[in-house]
Image (cartoon, rainbow, N blue to C red; front, top):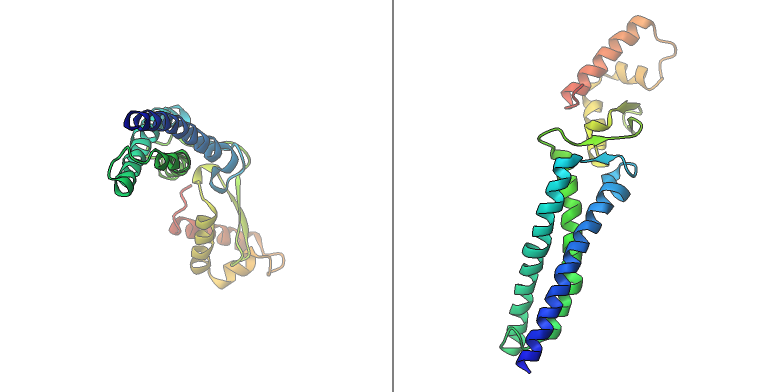
Length: 203
């Protein structure tokens, strides 16, 4: 019985390792194409270097760290239940569900971390400029995709602009002041650019 249990556990762990890699790549595909952290599908381009790191390092993380770590944890559960890590082969079946889900989540998290951190400037975006619509102040403006602002960051930027722009500037930007002069618009534009810089936007 022990040898049969061991053979069953080896088979389950082997299948789990394969599912770990599948879960990792599924997470990469989802994050890069279908989700893009709130961006339109397909606009996030992480570049060859980051892509190679996610594939090579990801396969190691998925199959070794997550897969083996889960197998050790399930072995501990089996030992608690039966007194032996091979006593309950059925426990290892949980890895078939747990591991690919963890790998999927880790992959999407890794993509989003690289996209927002991007220490070497490899991340690029394709598509139209990013349009930001603020509820307060009620203004709309566009940014380049390389600003990489998700929905939460856009809301934070809008809140910051509301504290940096004067009431007169906000009235003109929202259209509450009819036909402002060219000089006034120039001053408001300069104020808006300064407020954007104070709120962390780089031009």
